[in-house]
Amino acid sequence: MELEGLGEEVVAALPEDMRADFNPSGFSLELAVCVLSVGLLAVVLFLWRGFRSGEKRNLLLSFLH
Image (cartoon, rainbow, N blue to C red; front, side, top):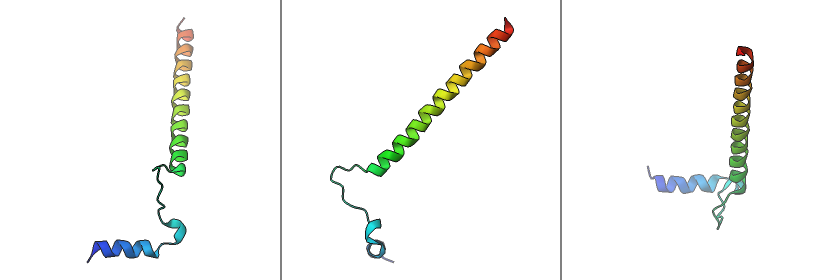
């Protein structure tokens, strides 16, 4: 089985809008939006976790005094 010929046949069978376009800058806007969304979610979750941790620590200190 020739893999080189098989790959060309598979790409030829794809619809025109599913084929990879050549982007001279190498930058995909969809990928950037996804990465930024996941990064923003991670930052928000870490900030929320840190806030909750500080809140629990303050509650514990006020309970002990």
